[in-house]
Figure 1: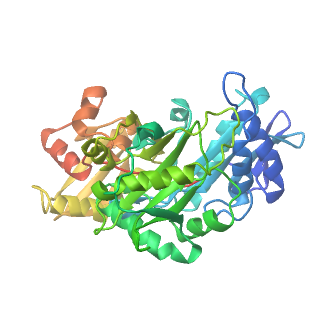
Figure 2 (figure 1 turned 60 degrees about the vertical axis):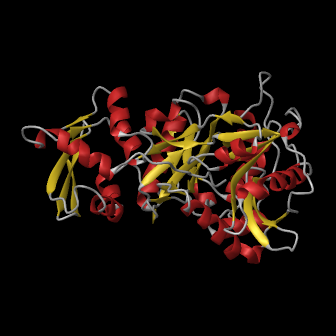
Length: 446
């Protein structure tokens, strides 16, 4: 394999694969504008141009220009993708995660293996920097071919049309919303982390201070968020929200929303929605062909309590079903050892507390052995399928195991959908303890 740090790699027909520089921003933007076309008339998409510039600016805290893989032919960029850093925690434990993003190729060079070459090089770079997972959003089914599996809910919303907002009455408290300033990160982060902690999520997304500052001071993209504080009539902070900075297809997305202990959502949600509505009326619609602003979308990934609160308040909301994150686990033993403390805590709180034993799991082309001693995960070893002796204790296609690891599906659900998911009775009990079905919220950090 060619070294991932090589300056350039010839990949046939005059094409060269290399890492980007700041000077590639215009070419990447031009490619993305025509790769992510809009509507049945395939109109150029100007919205992604600024995003491409952002990723190659060397100012983005989650992506450097040298993290963008580029294919050129005759000095023209014909395919590209960025390897971003995706903030993520599993059971409260930070995980190093890579995220391929803005993957695109020119229509004239598709089906020539350029994106495959890009993905292979990005996966190698991601591994070299210590990432334990890769995650990606994108085209249905497409990324399965690169080892990814649907595993975490993504972008489900409660859509509230502005015409359905309840009127503000004298009984409603006064609420205002304003964007946080750079020096207010600690205030925002305390509110944000409290809201996440209250929901029992297995996968969560920390919000780095560098990204917070970038969104306030540096970004030129309309793909980002703006954290805002929610204040009462005395200008005391009572909550926070994270809103996208543009209207898309007539909607503005509220990516997170929470209140302090002293400000109950049942009392403050209606005036908060009106304050968000006031902000939305000032936001741009970066694609002229899109519908004018008409609705507020509130992210409900991770079984957000806002769904039930809307019902209690009688606010009509349409459920926008979630899409899904693709997840790739390149090295299962390394990942499981990294999250060993999370797995040990689950065992300690279960009916198998103090468990001792070796669990052999086949992924059919390969497998693992998990060695437990008195409730401690002492080793996870890669195995070949021929080294399990008489038989392993469980079997999964790797895609199914990825889904259970992320808490997206239970063993029973996977068993009903995959005939090649199985386990001995005792192992099945242990697997449900180690990898219980759980809700998650993985926020895309554009």
